[in-house]
Length: 621
Ligand code: SPV
Ligand code: MN
Image (tube, rainbow, N blue to C red):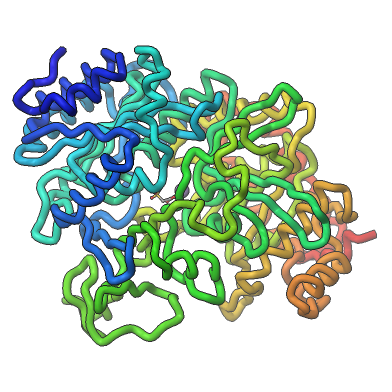
């Protein structure tokens, strides 16, 4: 297939031809023909091409420059402020099965609908053709990604968040082993946000390794390499026996220990994932998506798929998130989204400053005290407002950020948002028990997803992307562990316990104590208390850590409240989980063994103690 020559000039055409890849040419030709852009521009890895996209985004009004050099802001539409599950569908060929939580659509029907939506959608606009890699370049982890879009903002954001891939594509030697993404923001309203949210669609075509995204700009829906590629990569990892996870990667470096211990962690959106990856004094590799593969030495290695952070900006302030705050307030290339702009500076919720009198938000002009039509006070910025920044801009970037081998993983953390039951930190009894713990993860939903707030089951924080059946996904985790010579320890955390009067039981910074305890456990340094749900810290060890890290006295009573086992809540959760898994096919027997054993251990204690709340001291024999 040929690209219509009236749409592409020689310079751009030559950039494509230099790749020697007919699959790329065919894809560009097909969508140029279908979407009918005014012209096609190819973006290579050259600084000039990357700068061109940034300039275009400013020129076409998708981004606007702020007073600080390098800073811009972007607004998404009022109905486009988070990932939208209702219009996200995986196109399934008949007979293909996946997790029950995934919305699916018959493939042929979906392709027909999306082709109709794409027809002429780029009329009058420029189509950008850009190349990136998922994972570090020249690495066994790397996957090429081709992005077609009419949004300069999308390519600009991707150039911050992902590693360049034009040169990597040359190394494909003509193969079709890459992912591709077709995106259009669709018609734009006056404020340059997508105008037709009713026609928003995100369709994932596993069979062709491609994703379509139309009439949306919010990065979680529009940037191919973020959550769209995550679905494709989960299927690929299943076929190739590695793990593709919704996980951060970070290095723990406790003072005076002269060592670095790498952890990965899966948390549902807005449950402390980025802030765990950014704990002061430690180093960050990534905050969202990791690939894990086994090395020749039998150890699990992880890489960050990304090189940047698309982070929640709410509560980033000099006290709670000093490093990010510092990075966001200095001159460097970054994009703010859905914050309030006043006097060419950004303001967000929880930034620790008074609001200005007036400003501009994604909702339009804003002023203090303004209300919506129902009389509710208008929030100046969205709860899911975000920043887009390169990790290397942060003072705590890990030196192995781009290591093609990845980093050895010693610990895996599963974290959820639970106000009532789960203790702050628990170590699993084994790899298989840890897989069970990840598989029963529940969490209260947050503003990162457009839905009502409720407690939902979110195994490994990956349920939204699980394009293989849940049972198969868990089996893959079990097998991965069996193939390892040295299994990482698996932990669960919960930063959100509240007292009966609704106050948080822990400070935000306390997660550093839990991390240091986990790090110490990896190195065999602390004894732990065995309980029916796993191993918990001893009071003396935490008391010592609180003193050492924060010079704070950790009261025995606080420990007791935080680490008591609430038997009824724990058993109720297992009941909910049991029901969900009874509906799934192919769940490994080991999962049910752990479920039944954990239930029995809890029932035994309930009977033995004739109580519902059991102090951790009762287990510390
Ligand atoms: C998340 O919601 O998990 C995020 C942001 O990391 S998004 O890009 O929306 O997926
Ligand atoms: Mn995420």
